Amino acid sequence: MNYEQMNNNKLQLIGEVVKEPIYTHEVFGEGFYETALSVPRLSEQKDIIPITISDRLLIKHQIKVGDKLNIVGQFRSYNKIEGEKSKLLLTAFVREILDENDGQNPNNIEITGFICKPPVYRTTPFKREICDVLIAVNRAYNKSDYIPCIMWGRNARFVQNMQVGDKLTVTGRVQSRNYIKNLGKEEVEERVAYEVSVSKIMTENSKHDYNLEIASSIVD
Image (cartoon, rainbow, N blue to C red; front, side, top):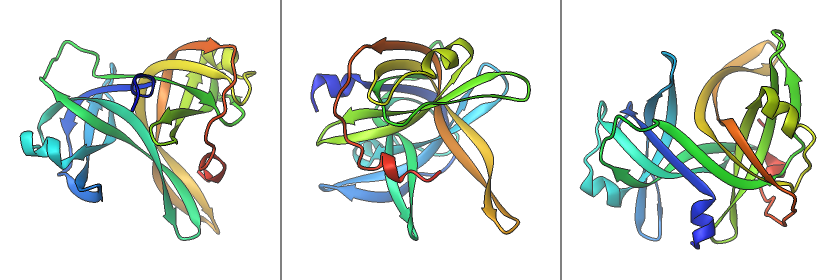
């Protein structure tokens, strides 16, 4: 991975482990496990963020429920086939575990990428302005991560007229959000969405060819 690909997706989370690591898959002999961190907000709420960690890190750091972790890595996406549908899943991919430091921002992300679907602008019943944007972030081996972002207020108004292919850098935090999915025939299901709540936007007046291999298959 070159420097630009390392630098266009930077994430740091500090939180408490809330589930035991579970083995999920292997890549070129390296095993990967999934767990989750409970990351505090400024309010009393907490975000529960899934994380993916290598067995090579687990050899050095014996992780268990209740441990406090300070991790750095990237916010990544992957496609999971469920029946005949494709679902976009997101995870914090851990590159390094740092020494605990309570003085740092417990949830900080910066990504640079390209808008890959038209922004969706709306207002809440309380007149709060929101804009949803899906950003494609380049990764090594001709892959891309597709990161849902949500903008508020002035940021929402600013980004609503941007075009597919426009490049931007956003900073903010990763958040989890519960919602109810209507499955039809009076059947509903509670789900969890993960997204970047954006606090700052920087733009470039340029376009770029990027991989849309899974953006067109996102169903929810």
